Figure 1 (cartoon, rainbow, N blue to C red):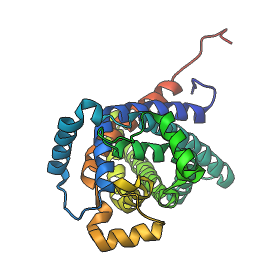
Figure 2: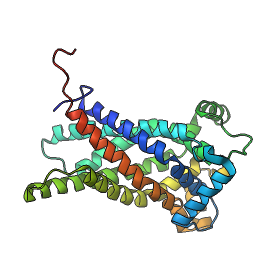
Figure 3: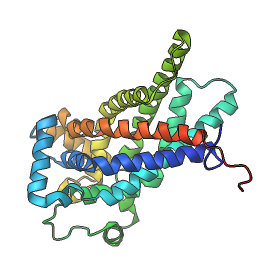
Figure 4: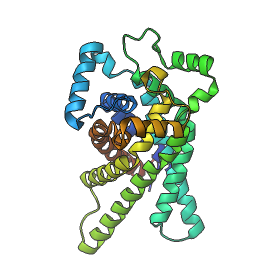
Length: 303
């Protein structure tokens, strides 16, 4: 089995970075709408599909096409780094666990590896996600809007200090369970498919099967961890866009009291509409790249 970089973990990181960037660039408008729904503190119920379409039309009418891609820079940077780092640390963690146990990896091992990868990735990328949240929730008419990533970083640091970049870190760490749930289910589904294939003499899983397994695991993880995502968005947003909470517990109590239990699942509609094609694109492209890298054989004589 070959490798394009000389390291399987680095190959995984490259594949994750490229696939994550591609899906993020394609589906950013849905991510923008999801985040705006999450920071909206009103009690008004939103329809999953109808509300998303209405929001799309409103943004297009009031802010133009550029409005739909507001904050795409930090989103691309954060997604490429997150997917790359996550797949890298996930592979490293799995390899270490297997070398220590000397046995085939099980459900608890996948859960441990994905949790460790998620914690490391979240700590390194949280500042980028804070900037992204700030930029996607501002409107074109805002006089004080950030003009770029650098402008946002400089102004946030000057007015709020270094701590601003780690706002929402506690719910973000709680949200690490998202990746743990997703990857555990994904690995279990892949294992089941391989065992079933061996018993029935079927071919190895194809791209479509990988995509379907990834989509199912992503939906379960998204629904289960939506409250943590909503709380993180509220804490990271600017005060005028819902970021008026002093702590995680303050955000939890106010959200529950003012918006009810349904408030913790705000933005779930556009999020599901986003994560389905996003996951299909990301994991489909990821599995294809990993297979292509593994089949790579350097020419003889090449240094």
